[in-house]
Image (cartoon, rainbow, N blue to C red; front, side):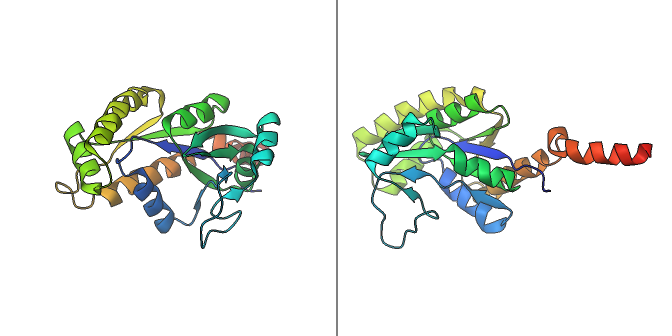
Length: 212
């Protein structure tokens, strides 16, 4: 029977590159999976139910809230998104290590419910670097950038509640910054597999056999 998998929640401010980091980890390491969220929004072309998201109606989402079925859920752009406990637990029991990429409040909610969950906070190397990244997108107004930077200050203040901090370095200074950050995330996942609690069943069996 495989060891139980672990859940790693990853968050950080907008523009820090956390989605790119997660994507790189998944590309390089097929032994890690992405937790699939539940949503009330309509599927987009090419999206597959159960793969891209678990698509449900508003009524079903309400019912799931009433059943305490979510680790966390939130309103995002007039739709709702949530992390189903049953989906996560099933994959963990199968021995899969999962990454859940959500906002800061969602991460804190998940960690509060399960002490085995590991929180990874992705930081920019500096305020100046993050502001430059936001401006480079070309999708934000000046007012929006100021609001986002104000939110970043609040989000980074919560980083002390996480287990691990990763700095996504400036690509102009370190061209392999994305790969380096992805390697650090996977190093955390790999190290967790060697923790005592992840290997207790093996140790119990080994010690019992040695006594014989």
